[in-house]
Amino acid sequence: MSEPNPRPAQGPGSGPAPARPAGAAKADAPSPALRERRKDTGPDGTKAGGGRPTRVPRGGIRGREGLAGWLFVSPVLVVLGLFLVVPIVMALWVSLSDWKGQGSPFSTGVHFVGGENYGQLVTKPGLAQSDFMTSLRNNAYYVLFVVPLQTALALGLALLVNGRRLKGKGFFRTAYYFPSVTSSVAISVVFLFIFSSSGVVNSLLAKIGVDGPAWFADPRGIIHLALGALGMNTDAPPAALADTTVGGLSMWDWISGPSVAMTAIIVLVVWTTAGTFMLMFLAALQDIPLEVEEAAEIDGTGRWQRFRHVTLPMLKPTLFLVLTLGLIGTWQVFDQIYVMSQGSPGKTTLTPAFLSYQTSFINNEWGQGSAIAFILFAIIVAMTLLQRFVLRDKDEARAKAATRRAEKASRSGSGPTTEAV
Image (cartoon, rainbow, N blue to C red; front, side):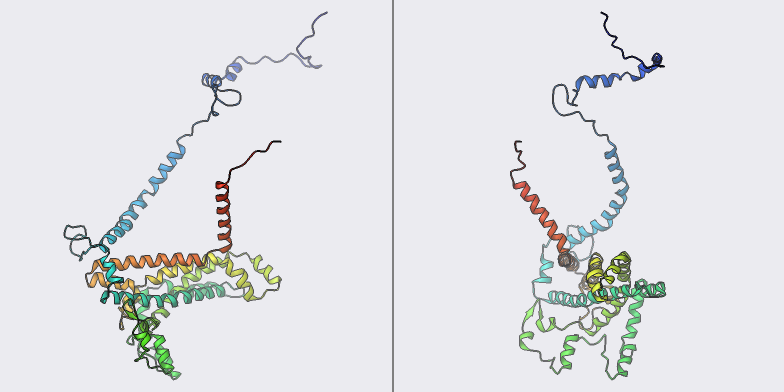
């Protein structure tokens, strides 16, 4: 009995298998390197002697890309280092030394005095402390009035320009933004004429029977003026306020409010800066989907409710940006003070930025001037962080806190356990 043929039978009509070309066998044959790798690697991808699966080593492409990136940004880093980092380090050293502006601040004749310049401004009673605290009071009132007013005006203008039925939006957008691109020095000079004793403002007040103040000659604050109009003798303030001093100033001086000169500067700054922030709010308003407002309108919500519950929450990132930029800009006010008042009358328009310039370049107290600049920097950072904390998204903060608690619990736990099936 014959053995069956192990080769499968070919179907009807099929001929013998075609012969492969002579070069095909050579092309299919593994390379010597691949044969050597197969000898050292098992069928499961591990090495013959055990251990981890073999990995193809990473190439140097990522490293070369990182090097190329650093080469591209190196010119910017050099410029920032020379014109930003180096001056900041030099100013910090000057604030800790007794340099008087003569020669190099790193010469052998300049001595390290530590925090003496800071102490004269903050803790040591004297003219330096009195002037610095006066500048902080003036700037605090300036910030308190300018930031809310310019933010509210910018948001109102943005809502007006973004209206569906408003015609000529391009004209109004340009008109509202025009003061922001005009020279601050030129506008300050114009406002000096407007708020002069015989200027436009006092002429309009005279027509309604109000005797306008001497805007840049009266050192009284608007709160003191209001109390005087109510019948209080502001020349003889209460002893509890006049005798209590904080930082070299009496409490009566702390609650004086901005002077009429500072009030004129506040009006100027609000008018010139609202246009820039209007464009920011306008861009954010145009990013709000129209379907969202239409859905709220269909639900029967009024205009104020739509603004409060739909529009304003979606503007929160832009609102934070506007408030932050406004806060930083108002604490650094200098141009208008330099052109319009030079700190007068009675130092009621003196600000830390102008005081730093005056102390350094006029009085040659470069250490104190630099110390004022760094204290102002610390105030701006602290106010920005406080504002970020107040305006934070509470829901997002809760979600992040829950995630951190879950991660902490998972790390402190015993880890995953395997159960027998």
